[in-house]
Image 1 (cartoon, rainbow, N blue to C red):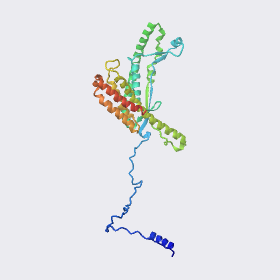
Image 2 (image 1 turned 30 degrees about the vertical axis):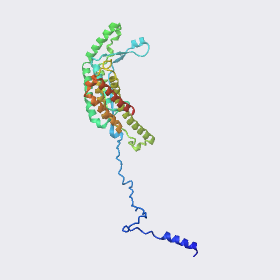
Image 3 (image 1 turned 120 degrees about the horizontal axis):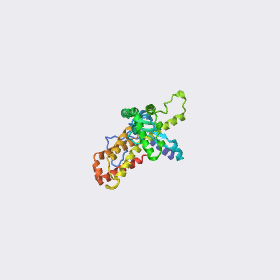
Image 4 (image 1 turned 60 degrees about the vertical axis):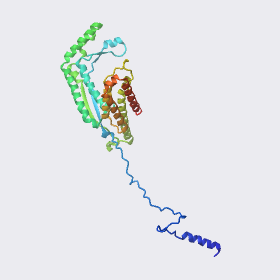
Length: 343
């Protein structure tokens, strides 16, 4: 073979010759470097990696029910045709049973208490309908029933004493008529009879399930667009519920800061226990009505409960100590700023 052919053959032979493995029992010369042995690494698959804990979010229909409370009340106002004509613009109404010291106002006050209780312990859904946290259902109904009973009893008491109340109110109006020279102000026909009056008072409570986007009977042929509309209403209701919770807590907090910022001894600085009591009450109620799965909302409620709990047992210090007042105002303001950033 030529020299070139011999060189090529040598190169091919070198490439095909197996590389001998190193015997660990034989010492390696100091001037020889060996490559580290390769240890196979087992790469974990997705199935081998533990799943991150999931935060369960319930659907709105699992967390709440709808509550509708319908009130009807006798209205102690009567259109005054003569005064309206004299006035020449709009209508003038005569206010019957004016003042608080009468059974008509007592019955109306009891009905208003029912309304306020419902509003205080629910979050808005739509006009006249509220969302009630299902966890709070038993406590809610237990508190609502006696209030309705008291309202019904007040109406029954008014019914039994209707003639007395009408006579007393006619006497009141006659005194006004005499002093103002308006004899037509007194008119017995302005008052309904007792049965008619009682029929104008009523309270009706309805509990209904929260609708779901996929809860329609397929036979109705509800379109996907209509289902999407329902889902948006549900999403909006959840967002509005969170905003309502924060807004309700912010109201007494603003009032507290305004009061605590006035130096002791100045006009408007008088401290009343109700300032703290109102924050304690709203924090407690919002903890019950909250239907949000957002842990941030729950944390804001706990922070307010913790903060006002500190001062609930130290009201005298807030009443008398400028430094304690200043500290409380700063702490409430800091928490309020956080809440405002979430609204």
